[in-house]
Image (cartoon, rainbow, N blue to C red; front, side, top):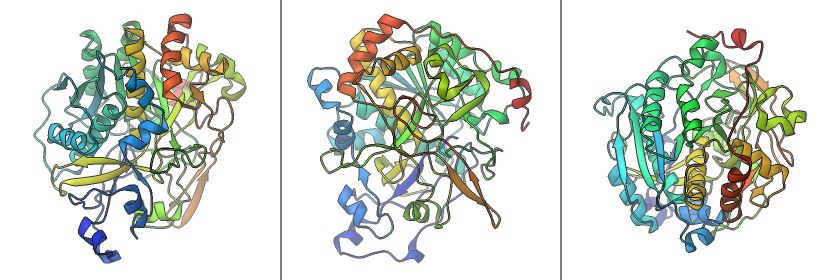
Length: 487
C-alpha cells in the first residue's frame, strides 16, 4: 500500500505572468516498485502555491491545504492555546531508507508556516545501516517523499512533540520483502521505549503473505507495544476496496482486500476522508469518505489519463483476523471478521496538503500530496496530544475509540457520506470492486468517524483510563488458506 501521490505545481513565474504550461511540458512519472500505487511526481520550483493558486492552475485545479487550515479544521488551536502541543511525547515515524534532506526540509517547512522547531528530532537505523541515497533509484526517491510527508505532517498536529525517524535498510514491497527489517526496527523502539506513538504509512495486501505463520512471526512488536503502553497506527490503504496483488504494484485484485498491519487488532487503522475547506480552515461541506476513483481531473493530474483508477480510502473485512473484542458493538457491520479502518482523517487527492522537499533528482520546492499516508501521521499527532494530557502512553486505543463512539462522545464526528467502490482497467477491460458505504456510526470505509481534536484529546485520555487497552482477538478458521499468496 505504501503510497502518497507527490503532486507539485506550476512555477511561480508562470503563475505571476498568468501563463499556463502546455501539456507537453508535463514531466514524466517514473514507476516506483513498492507496495502501493505508483508515485506521481511533477517538477517543482521554490515558489509556494496558495490554495487559490492551486485551484487556478490549469493542470492542478485542486485545493492544496496548508498546516493552519488543517489545524483549524480539526480544532487543534484551542489545545495549543492551553499548552497541549505534544511536549514530552515522542512520535516514532517508520520509513524505509528515509530522506537525505529531511532535517533541512522540515526546517524550511517550519519557517514557511511559522511552526516551532521540534524539541528533539533524531534519526536512527536500528535494523542496520541504510544504504547511501541514490537519486537514480526510484524506490529510494519514493520513500524519501513518503518520509517528508510523514515527518512534516505529524509535526503540524503536535508541534512540540519529539520526532524519531526510524529508517530501515530494505524497502517494503507488498509482503515479500522489507517487513522483517521494519518489524525489527519497531521492536527496538518498543524495547527501549523510545516513543509513545508509532506511525506507519505502509502495508501489504493480506493475501500476499505466504502463510499465517509468516505473518504471525512479524507481529511480535505489536504485541510488545500494546504491553508497553505504546500506540501503533497504520494507514488503511489508498486503493479503496481492492489492493495490489504483487510487489510490482501494477495488478489489482478483483476481489475486496485489506492491508496488514492496518488489519491487525493491536494496530489502529487510519482511513481517509475528503475535506472541503475555505481559506481559514472552515468546512464548506461535511467530510466525505475519500474516493477520487471517478474524479476526472484528479485522474488526469495524478495518473495522466481520465480513466478511473483505484484512488480511495482502504476499508473492508480482514481475511485473517476474527472480530476483536472492541468491535463486538459493531458486529452488525463486521460480522465475525476484523473491520478496517478504525478512524479516518484527511487523505483526498481532491484536497491536497503541502510538503517541502529538496532531495535529488527533482528540484527543491513544494509538492502537493495525498493519501492515507497523510491521514496516519496527522492522527499520530492527535494521539500525541492525548498522551500529553494523560501524562503517559495510551497503548492500544482501539477499545477506547469504540467506547467513545458508542457513548456518542462529541470528539468523534461521524462521516456518513461516500464509499470506497473502485474501478480500474486491465488492458481494455474495466473492472469494478464493490466497496462499502459510509454511514452514521461505524462503517467499513470511515471507521467510527473523524475527530474534533479539542474534544477528542481529553476524551481519549479519559476513556483509556476508564476502559483500558486490553484486546481479545483470534484468527479466522480460513486464515491459513486465505493467506496463501505470492511468495
